[in-house]
Length: 156
Image 1: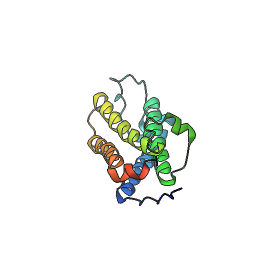
Image 2 (image 1 turned 90 degrees about the vertical axis):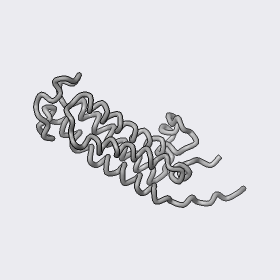
Image 3 (image 1 turned 135 degrees about the horizontal axis):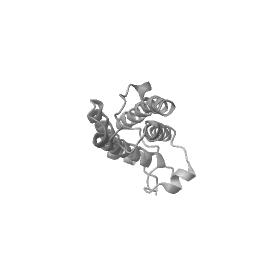
Image 4 (image 1 turned 30 degrees about the horizontal axis):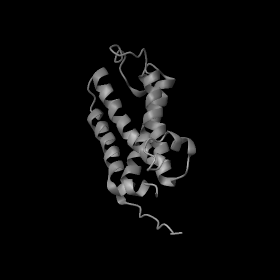
């Protein structure tokens, strides 16, 4: 049986991991604050900002922020870092030729871009929206670079 050579850790992967980690740690505190104080005052949101949205307060947006922009990127970061096996994640992974954490990293980038697009339609312009949309695009871009894809591609 052939022994597989270990793959070289590409520099672009360090950037991807940093993007995911920083997104995760930046999203959890405001998400939790919005859930604990649904008025939005804890994060400095003006009252009435959600009047034209389906949300009565900031609890549900805070939950989405904490889970999808906080917990999931940190889980993707940890999975990319440790490359551990997780049968449940593999079962729902639509890209079975890649490690589940790679798929989750792509999903996190797409979710962030969707979050910002939805946010733009519901609340007034806010200077971080283009930055965060680009951040999500960067996560998708770095995830899809050949060096990163190859690093997380499973042997056949």
